[in-house]
Amino acid sequence: MNFDTYQEQAVTTAIYPHSAQITYPAMGLANEAGEVLGKVKKIIRDGTFNREDIAAELGDVLWYAAALARDLNVSLSDVAQGNLDK
Image (cartoon, rainbow, N blue to C red):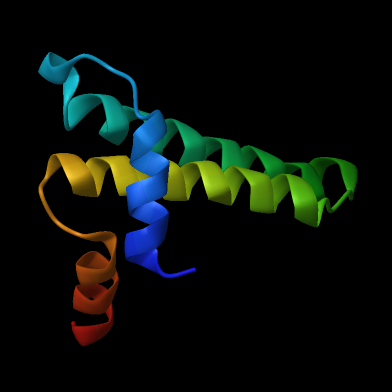
């Protein structure tokens, strides 16, 4: 799957008020990134490493990134390419 296909499919489940565009997915992105960090923190605290849990949280990060890119009227593939170019 490529980024644009993912973005097209992911945003079909993006249900939030139009007035919350940009802010809602930005807050969700920050929250999910924190959840990734929480899973990684457990490696230090408990000595446990759960790859699947971390990967699931990364999927949530990707969903919010796709929604935010859509709200900014940019494609996720352009965001990815721009990041590599810089």
